[in-house]
Length: 158
Image (cartoon, rainbow, N blue to C red; front, side, top):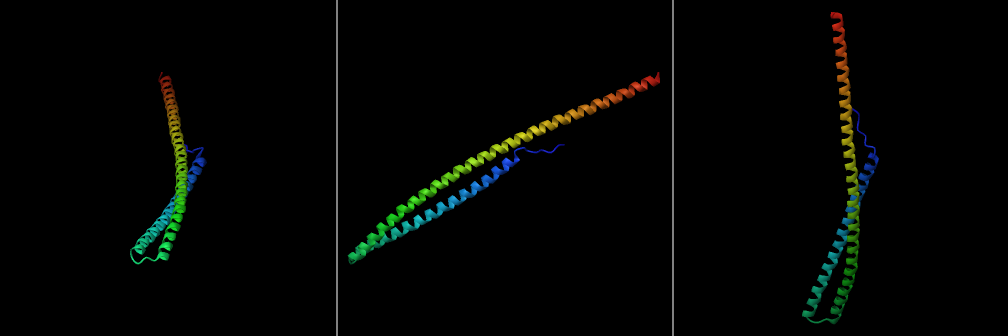
């Protein structure tokens, strides 16, 4: 039996490498998004702490300077939070791009794997035809040899 060799195996190998690379890029983008979201969470927690501190400052003896500093700190953190939200949005966009690229690369790989499967099925069908042809030829040869022997023995019997 002949050995199956897929003519576009090198392309399939490249598609597999591209898929692995796309998976790594997706993983990296996901890690970046997680880090950006964590930074945002920390900033929100700090802001909540300053707001809590501001409420406490207003309940006791009023110290105007401390209250102003607290308001400034809250406004500053609001700006940081707004900037961080933009960073999170950019990371989400990058993650979505990586997801789309991964999906595209996976579809290309699957397409090439289907082509390889079809090529292998065709190879098996061709092998089966060739085997059947060889069996037919062998049967015809054997039948012909038997007929020669029978014809030769009937001539010598007469």
